[in-house]
Length: 537
Image (cartoon, rainbow, N blue to C red; front, side):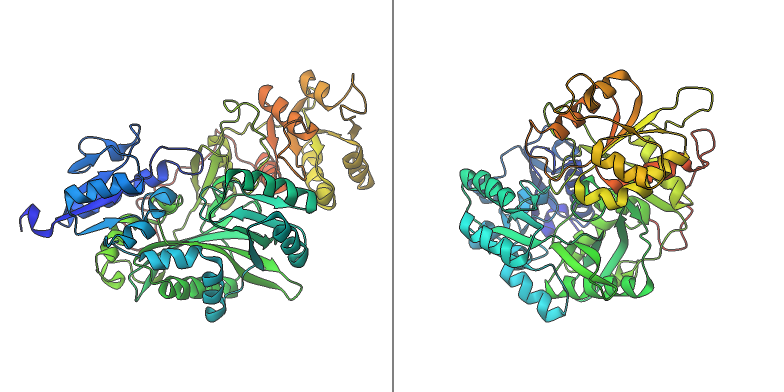
């Protein structure tokens, strides 16, 4: 069969790399190009980032170094006359073009433009979830500040606010009162919006995500990833553990609902689904957060640690091959006998004036992988690789300190966290309300004033003193750059002090410090031979 016999396929890349749209999408584009070439197609790629493999001269048969805008892409298509266009591997940049290209009569390979819109359109997606009996947080769509305030009151605070059609949680916040809603809507309306703002009930629970490969009839689930941090922190900024550990009935529900949803969306290729497990008073139940019928940023990580070549299989499914014939079966793929932990990496020291507090808007600039036979060791490896300092108090030296300054809503959980550091031998420092909470639980703590309480002896001067090894700082709101909590976290960055802005991350760090692991006794796992069976090509 000659190279020309099957025609040309155009693959849309992800454009310039930025926070929220990282190298993971470039990986997916390159793997797709390789799979298409193997299947006998000529491939042209459209991308305008000089720093990626997709724009190397020998990746595709032809490279168009053009912006990913409707007119530029249409000009390329006019020249190439392709048999189809792939939008699923270029993240949000490429997927946003699907509707326009479809309206111009261009053939979209894989999931249709209508199915992509169905996953993003609030009302259509809610109808689909109702039909499939999938629970989701209550939500409304609004265009004005008045509508937003009414919606937030109706749903009840706290609420999650975000524009539709965004990637990386851009401009997404948790609003805890009407002042937050007003501030947010002013910022969003100033930018001019075509699509509505989405307001959802913020439900605090365990978050997880699933990547599926679907051919329209069968679904393969390479793995389920469990997030360490609960909902409210963007999935790209969360520590993710594979395989996730869930109760049998919840895991069964995850597999069934993911399969039902992938099929109902008419997915041909990849779909990423994010869920939360929430106890509504009647026990844990599964709620869907969102579904994205495209490659996600977890695909390279999950492909590596599950042994499933996800992009290759998804590309073949997009072109009509059946999942059950691809050699990995259907349903949930077999779990390995090790744990793999993805830990995000941040560049706050290079990003001036950015608040380090983690929330729904993505801030990480990379990630590392920790693999071990136990979950605990995998977490330890991941934390060390991500650059967290493993400082353990030594009996003979001055005890390093931990400074606690958490928001009111986190106070009930503070004693359990403080106890872990206290038992390890750390000196505890805390601001007034925090210190009183810790003292009531029978631990010694040094009270530290906030700046407005004592200008000469306060949290800032304490950080300058070098006595503090870790800062645990959470704030109700982190959009105000002059807020004291923001300044505290920025000073920690400048003084190279590890700052934890989520209680769950702080718990993991404390557990790592309490574990028997050190850089001298870590094990090595061969992921090429340590699977519990399965095809690992």
